[in-house]
Amino acid sequence: MIRNLIFDWSGTLSNDEHITLAVTNDVLNRYGAESIDIETYRREFAIPVENFYHPYTGPVPRKDLDDLFFSRFKARQFETKLFDDAKFLLNLLRFRGLNSAIISTMDQEILDPLVEHHQIQDQFDLVVGNAADKFPVLKHLIETQGWNADETLYIGDTPHDIQAAHFAGCRAGAALYGYSSESKMKVARPDVCFNTIADVVTYIDRDHLIATEKKVIATVGGLIVNDKSELLLIKTRKWSNKYGLPGGKIDYGETMEQAYYREIREETGIDLDNATWLIAQDSIENKEFYKPRHFILINYLSRIEGPVKLQNNYESDTIGWHSFKQALTLDLNQPTRDAINIAHDKGYF
Image 1 (cartoon, one colour):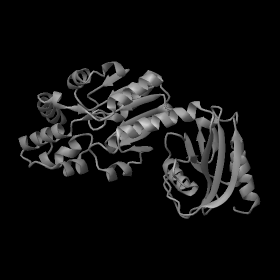
Image 2 (tube, one colour; image 1 turned 180 degrees about the vertical axis):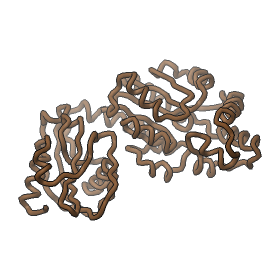
Image 3 (cartoon, one colour; image 1 turned 30 degrees about the horizontal axis):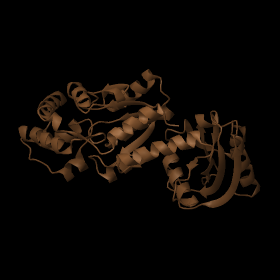
Image 4 (cartoon, helix red, strand yellow; image 1 turned 60 degrees about the vertical axis):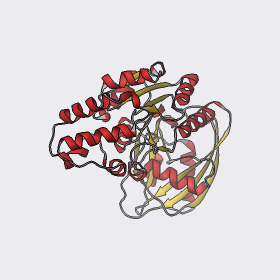
């Protein structure tokens, strides 16, 4: 369940694209570079900002770039607007009792007055500016607040935001309505994508419903076997730190196989192209799961050949390959142990 939301500011809550582009061009022009259009900005902007500026300006120190950018931005800061539904979302978080914070590269002396200007200062537990590198800042905030990383969603509009969330071990939300191109954002492997802030509201409501209502939840999982007959298993806190199969919930409108391929890609980084039906299992308030839930576990078996790069997400603490004999010595959750034994009995490995 999501208990904590952390937001980037510009391009996520604040709609200040026209000012940001104008001020960026002021900086480029000051150091002899030509102005760029919004498509170029969306395609090329990167954090830390010197990675974006230096190909145009040469090795100008970050402090000089920041000082000029923020001085120009400050002169126009109150032209900014919030994205549609931003205040509604923040009110919903308070109504649900969720924690919230902002982490931004914006200068703190600009960010604080902007938050007050939009009358949302009481909606946040923390507002953190001057985060030139969000990797350590996000991780430190989660740790010092005592928030569980796997119950925390960080939403931002740059690949750096997504990568910072991965580094901190929390869920990574991509604001596709922001200032980076959709293709750039998806390459960074966000856990969830939002086309509008209204999509964030829907996501929070769905998460709350699943966590609080007694509903039957359909999930898909995969017993993935490599060309050495090894099995891919993950270890997760949700299953009491036991090992299990990668997978997750089926989204509305998805077929079982579509959900299966998506979940495996999100949890392991593997793009599968085959799925053999294995078993459907009841899991009714299994005490191994961290909360009482009624799942239908729909499991497939897939084969892969050759080396693959494994990329776990916030849901898995450990991911790796194990022989059949090794797997049986692990602390497996019972549905996974049953699925492995059934697959072995059918001669799949």
